[in-house]
Image (cartoon, rainbow, N blue to C red):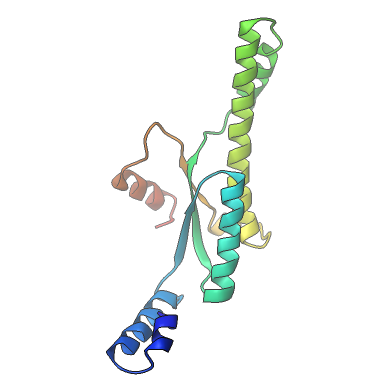
Length: 157
């Protein structure tokens, strides 16, 4: 709206752009929510987007939603998979793949949480007030009402 408003210096288009800019960029009237994926490159781009929006638009990110986050494996599952990976033969090879997948899922989950801390400039208190919302990985994406219920449960909506 700002760029178009500057091109149309007068008239109804200019007035519309001014109203839009006021509505979209006012922290008391709007907030920014960014949806991302738990992949390192995508998460780093999310942080860049966060900084750009705050510096160039003047509106900080209110919430980050990380979609398709793998479940956190238990320590026991990680230990058991590592122990089974020591078995020679196909069972050990399968357990090795399982251990790698469990570790990768845990790492993706930790990366998603780290994005929240970094988005807050390393402020640990941010993770207590507006932690990233982690939408779990599932066979299919959640429908709108399921996602809305999760956001409400996490006080993110």
